[in-house]
Image (cartoon, rainbow, N blue to C red; front, side, top):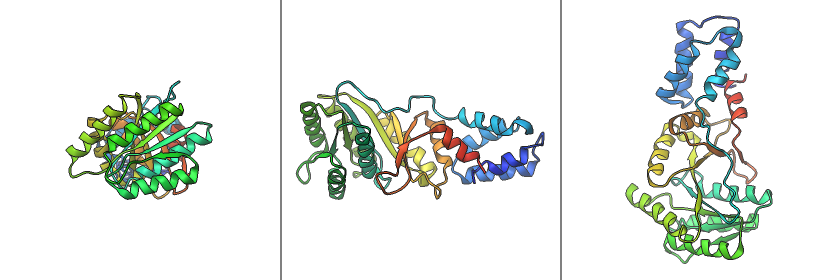
Length: 279
């Protein structure tokens, strides 16, 4: 049941909702991780809704809080370089692999760069995924500099004329400043060979408002062009996707809903809003 479904049912056939209805709606929205600012904005707009057009009006209100920026992944005539960033534990490395599988299934050639070298498990994980889905993974020696691995991968894909280079980056260093400086360095080094067309930030839907805070920090370091939201399924409080787009105006481009490489899809705003509202 969508987080707005009971509210729509109450409004149908009524011209207004009573104060208890508004309090209940506010509690539901806060519980669904929309956050206090967006919750207040939606309620103020919803109070103007008439019962006979509740569904259409609410859909329009929610849609106005989604980003209007392009959701399609960049696709250059030459190699398209994509950096994938995010804190450890969000499903970042897995999302890189799933995106690679998604692109390959669409007929694109893909190379992966295992530049999260501070975490040996991340390199091993990406190599395992690469073998599974049949794409080349560029990695360095133990303890290699992330920027060095990314540069080697950029050189390799230029020789191969690969369609996409996906770069998995570090998600945690000793402190925030170190992490951001490392990401800036990776981007700068790659762009000696290739333009970085996309920086995708991976956010775990179950982290709620913390996801917005993470996005703000990463955007300060590298211009984030799109989001991959993981665990956006029946167990996640799915309102966070709306909250993120409303707060940051960064489009969600892909969602992950499970462990398989098939549990990954392009984000569809209409279907998402329908899910929030439907019975």
